[in-house]
Amino acid sequence: MDWKPDRTEKKPIYKQIAEYIEHEISSGHFSPDSVLPSERTLAKELNVNRSTIVSAYEELQSLGIVERKKGSGTRVSTDIWGISHKRIPNWGRYVEDGSFLPNLPLVQRIRSEIQKNDLVNLASGELAPELMPDNHFKNILATQSFIGSLGYDHPQGNDDLRKTLVSHVKENKHIETDTSSILITSGAQQALHLIVECLLKPGDAVAIEDPSYTYSLPLFQSAGLRTFLLPVDKNGANPEDLLLLYKKHRIRMVFLNPDYQNPTGTILSLSRRKKFLEISTEYGIPIIEDDPYSLTSYNNEVNPTLKSLDENGNVLYISSLSKIVASGLRIGWIIGPPQVIQRLADAKQQVDFGHSVFPQWIANEFLGSEYFNSHINMIRKQLKLRRDELVLSLKEIMGEQVNFLTPEGGIHLWCKVDPTINEHKLLEESIKNGVAFVPGSILGSNKGFIRFTYGRGQLDLIRKGIVRFAESLNHLKQDR
Image (cartoon, rainbow, N blue to C red; front, side):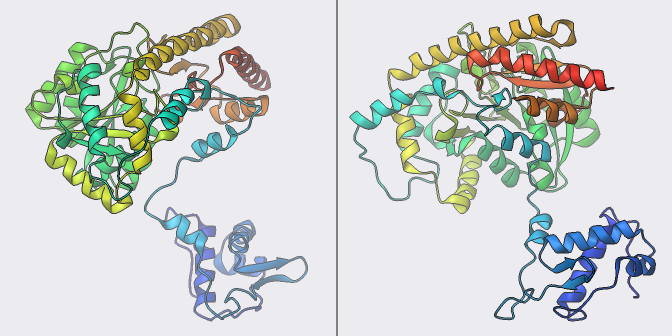
């Protein structure tokens, strides 16, 4: 065999071997039902460990390309060409090689586990079912007649909903805008994807907060962007750090979550907000303001958004109903210069041909009704109760084992725990013990942090979740 694995490649050697053998099968050098070289023979020929060949053959077996039987060796699958003698696609390779990266394995693991009913969910970033306005929605559906069109809607979203949003952001966020500057999206997540895909190109440098929700998103890597971090302290990200990054890396865009930041719960101070805007104006750096939580303020006072302070059109403002009404409604929006909104709307049309008319209709009816303000007041009270219960439980059960700043809004509490504890093992032990949280490494670069989310957790289960977490942490400490 003339071929040898390339030891300078990042790709594992066993995968290189598996791909080579697959290529040889595809080209006809190994026919269906033919026997492949034994593990020892091939290992000697390629100068690798036998275990490497075992892994390569197991990889091929998992893809249905070979069959392995004890005592009979490894054979090329007889079904590899299918009943019509056509090559079966290597779906495993396609899944692995796509440019759109999957979620982190830990994120996938958490999302899988939180579907279980017996788990205390302190991980999921959404509201508990009892905090969603089910009765209000039922009343709308029972008393209001849908009179809209069932055809394709306006590329930027339903006109009535955008008019309602103009009033909504003016009243609640002090943002002056018009319908031509608004695009309806499928939540804030789609808004971020549209901005990254349409306004940036591979190799561009962007700044994100550390820690932050955007830290966990593979969309920047999928788009080939270079990400640089803005450390978050008790007053939010520091604009001076952005200035240094810009001078060194020519930052093209900065992503900020100013109010009750995910995961730290911090508020970007007013002086820093103004400084970020000054830097943005001086250097022409667009600011992406992600604002899912500002209306959850427990003292009922909403801070001035960056967009409301923006006098030059430098801010693209993202918000949604996911964190304050219902995550499944999938209603979000972007506010920005009309030419940018039109570009993003064109891209959205290419992806889904516009948003579904029914969630837009329900969102419009709800936002424009008397129910909305009473719902927000209820959310603030209920989230504060949950926050207080979580804080009290942590102090009484864990004492000095954890440190945190108590948030004044939002749904997250960022905790510092023992940095020497393996967070992967801690998560597994906690899940086994019946509680889920988000390890800090998913959301930031510093070790020894975890995020508890109390918006999704039932009030009467929060203490039970912290008891289980404390037991899991102490169990790992004892095993060290």
